Length: 344
Image (cartoon, rainbow, N blue to C red; front, top):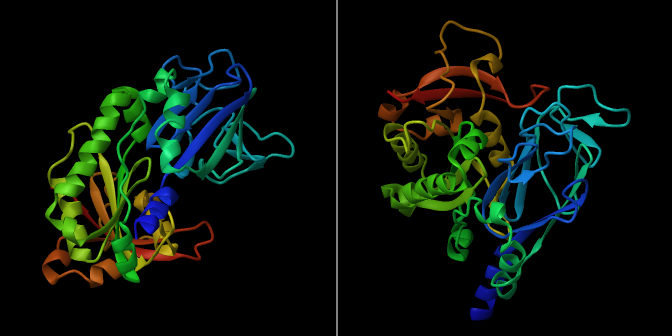
């Protein structure tokens, strides 16, 4: 048993390495073995500051790292971010041979190359043993003050016991911080890290914790799974009732569907993709119009799907207003009806 436990821990201890291979900051090497969020751009306040590259915007893109996950998001830059020949974001026409992605963010994989202006950045994602964890990452980062200031809130995953007991269908609760990158820049790394830790503590201290199966930091918030849709809703309602901070707004999505656990504690399945897709939907994304739908608030709301609605008591269902039918993809092949509840 001890050997099995050590093997499980080693599988979960991964790191993400970021190497600048060309450009003004060539040679810079960052190692993330914990949750971290940081910004790259010409601004002197950026964690990776590239002031001498005129093709880069002041706040060009952000990286949200939760090993082994690494998500890149373009921050409205002029020239966009090229990853393996595909451009994400950007307002200018693409160069010949470069394909434009229909969205501004991408989940990076091991070996991906990022190009912005004259700068090239290589991403490495690989297993990280418990012994390595105690020295290598700390050694790489000890002189890098910008990375040391990054968000180090601890991510939680399902325990091996929870993983074995994970039911086929679960309630998926996604809490998203609206404008998380702007909060990071405004608050600074330490305050933003404290904010994330406060949210994690709220999850752990809530009465629904005994029903919770897993909790993961996403870079913009948290994704949790529960055995009961009612318990997940109670967690969501408390977040709206008592905000973490008055100047921080959230959007909450609650879905029900089949999932499975990855070897590193990730929650996988179509239901995970769906809850991420409908969390940020707005009224303009509604398919068709009808007088029977309510005005969808942009923030401080809970969105639920029909499978969740069916699992709630009549009293809880009455709290929600029909928001309409929405498409979860560009081809309208995946559509769903949504209901919303907003902060009183």
